[in-house]
Length: 315
Image (cartoon, rainbow, N blue to C red; front, side, top):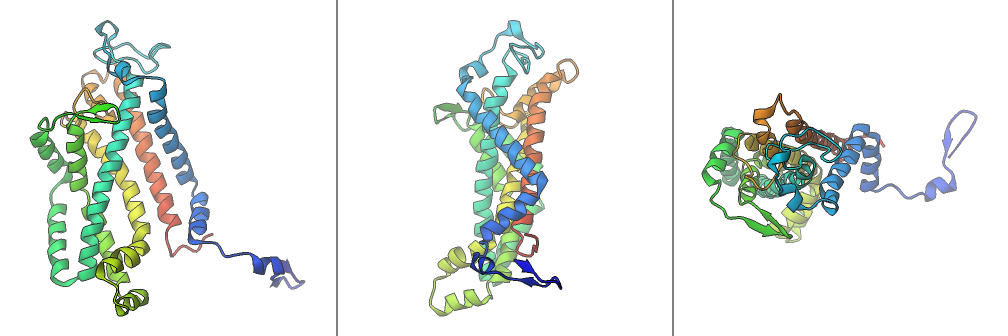
């Protein structure tokens, strides 16, 4: 691009031949300008590498091995994060516990997202009686305190599901219970977001054109309207991972979450409850990992919200 003496821009041939940026490229440019989101993404990648890559050097058998002669030893060269009340290495347990905490966050959000999209899409698209019934159910669920419901359901179902073998690891049945409970009690906000998106989009020209050509309701919902509502869904799902990890930590701290021998960052905090002053390393390392993970995901969610906002004018 050139400028004249009067500073009026003149488009050159190269400028005219430059293809316009796609929506993905525009979103990436906006995302890169959000420095906290970039930092959050880097920290989150490092945490995932820590939880997954650590298994290449430390076995799960070692993480669960206890030696009471080594109990409550502080951080040292042999045990960088110290040992717990029965002599297990905390570094090894934060690695394997991190896998479970992250897995719970991701799988619970999958359940939450599927339910939220299904309820919100049906309510927003069909409206009328269907919308009224589904929204009343949603509002009723919102009126029940989530943590209270988590505690009651975890107490009732805890220990009733046998252990599960998956990918060479043995998980206590409480993992499945926690995933389902968190997922089934967290979909309401997303359902309302999706409903609002569908209400605003279903009367647009492209939807009316699809109806006029005889397109089925299923295709209109999932191939026309839903792809245009993906931005708030992605942001909500991202932040939902952090909420699920925190929810698991809450109830595990109360002794109602994932049960031993399966480690999570949450139930490691429960094990540190009686040693808050005498052995601070028991809660510091799993606590700081939860803090970093939640902050990173929240920063990432903020960046995605700004990057995917169709009203944003920044490039």
